[in-house]
Length: 398
Image 1 (cartoon, rainbow, N blue to C red):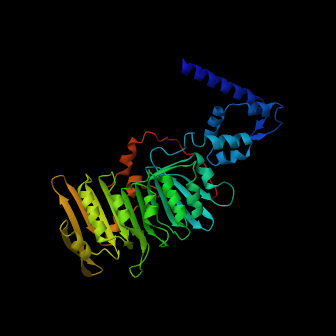
Image 2: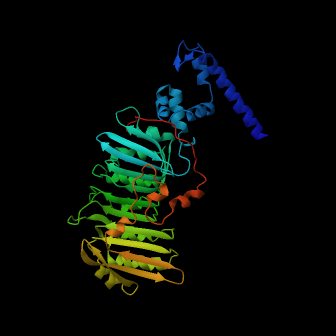
């Protein structure tokens, strides 16, 4: 009975909307109003309930929704009010979004579906529509990739951190220039995507200042299953990233059975912290764990063997690199009874195995990940995600 009454009330709302628009529709030719509005149109319009107007907004292209806020106070109030409750426009399945800042003051945003097909592309420049307004009714999930240029500058992260945006990626990749990224904006963004983000990577990101990353900043992302900090610098450069044992030990709280912790130039990590991590790992049911420490001043193979040698097995493999013979040192714990394994690496090549490729046409989303993690299958159970088609839009600005 309650459902029947609701349907009757909703139909009455539709009828009121139809009557309010009937006099106007006949005066619209090729999308233009050819006459004057009826004398009572604005009065009738102001009395319309919100729900049918919300349905009208769903048929508009994404770029026109924020523009509707300038039509009237009614639409401005409606859009602000319902932006948290209306279904979000998104791709079918779990796609990815790529940000690129190729020119000063210009941001390119590309959406890809799970099959690698580009859904839409927008160039944001000028002062027409803000990025946060464009994404007010858009769903962002699975993968956010900040690519080349100043794609993760403060003005971008600040707008992605707005309260009304639906931003819940499982993977966030920073692979651009971070010289215009502050610690405050980065931390606010990571707080925004927590607890959805499970994998965070700074892969070949340039201009990572010592003041940008810290244990507190990484902690803002919550419980991670994968972390990579690999700044873009040559072998002759000295990297000093302010990450220590607190971040490493937080990874031991992961709920995932497979996870990795790859860092470069993190001077705050100590052999004692590594031993504490190993002892925690031995008490959990995580099957495979990979640790990589490259150019971390306090962590060398000799230091790890001295502190943790009674827990680890040393493995050395020979390889030819640039015509010269070298040896790769790896420490492992193998629990054959339940097929659990922990590995500790010290070479830069291991970073590449976990690099995430930049989304591009004809590349499946699960092919973007070079390791064995099947993040798409992990998300198949997320029944609360609304799947809608993207509408057309272009030439936005941030």
